[in-house]
Length: 143
Image (spheres, rainbow, N blue to C red):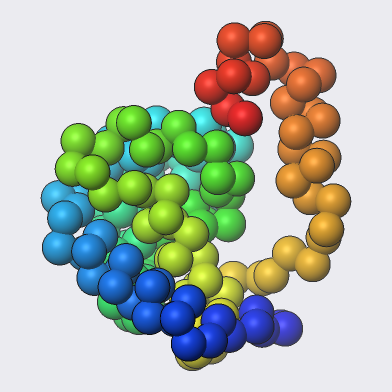
């Protein structure tokens, strides 16, 4: 499995500080997971308990193993941002999952635990499919 390129210098320091801030602020309520529009499209997340998934994400931020559901959420996330206003603790769950994805992909050192998408058109296709299926109001919330 290919590895993500490692961020260097200031970026690594930012990621480390942001992970520490998130770990200190998150209460594991799971509201971010509940607000995520992509969880219903991942069979691995069907029936997952939001608090357990977020606990697994925080494990990834601590460079621990994480849970299969947390790894599935990092793969399912398309950075819609729907999770951000749902968070009562000012955590920025979008950043939380993004850092967890970097860890899970091996981009911050350690072994990769999720496949890396080497698909430059991936997000363009998501936007195109969204435009075909969502109302204008839904598009404003998603994009």
